[in-house]
Image (cartoon, rainbow, N blue to C red; front, top):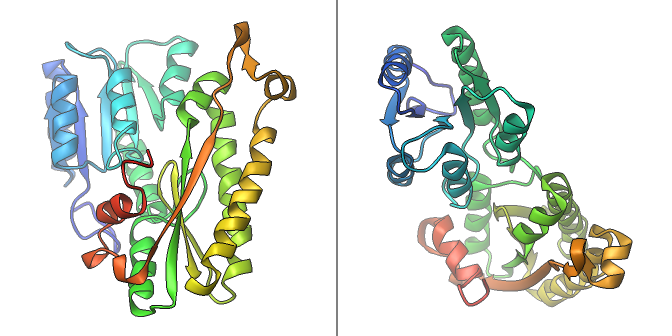
Length: 295
């Protein structure tokens, strides 16, 4: 059985491959090792399966009958439940630009066919071991996610003097499209640092900063200092934004070919202890802290 002390059920691998021989080989092999394995031959089927039974890892062929693997990856990354799911691309393409495309979209590995099944086995094992130990932290910022956030919500529910401040970033995808994923990720890390530095100033004991999704953050504060926390965050973020851009672009308000600058924005919100959702459900927390009107 493939499991760890932290994960009591088998890891779920989704194989997205339209070649019957390759699909059967991968499915049979990983099933024999004790993994739970699902298979999809079409990109749209893969998206449906991933939505219904979130996999722990996806082996994704680039060439599919309906939509290609790059598009499947993009859609998976746009969904909260699968935005951090490890993806290994399987492809016959060997050119550097194809590999970089896959990695830029968020794939964790990229293997060319024909491949060594033992190599895939060890890569999958190592990735899942790493994810199992690191799943509680966001891969880019290192901020707590999932269970660690839920633990803090329980704490807030039990102490009416506490509340939760939320931070939502806007226009980050457009920013990343213009300046690249490396700069995009640097911005996320900078925002996380601002939150980390602000939290102890407004909560002396056990300050907490977490990340609900790629562009949604939260901070536990005392109700008495909630406005102080939000004021300091607003000031520091507002001052920091200009430094995320090349000086000339920020000064002119445009980038290449005089196109308008995709300006990063942010919004702050809060909820008090009585509005923490039942069972500290994170999806409900997301909707309560970041209603659709906020975007």
